[in-house]
Figure (tube, rainbow, N blue to C red):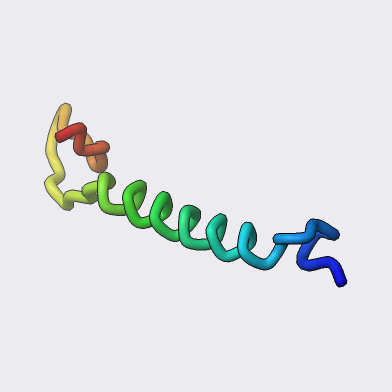
Length: 50
């Protein structure tokens, strides 16, 4: 019996990929900072590089 995608270990690879995708989404969303300061020449959003 084959797992997900027809591979012999498809279920394990699926869950490893799911965990890696959730971790990547968390790191991406954690790096974005949205501010609400308005004015001439100010940015409404920026990516925090620290």
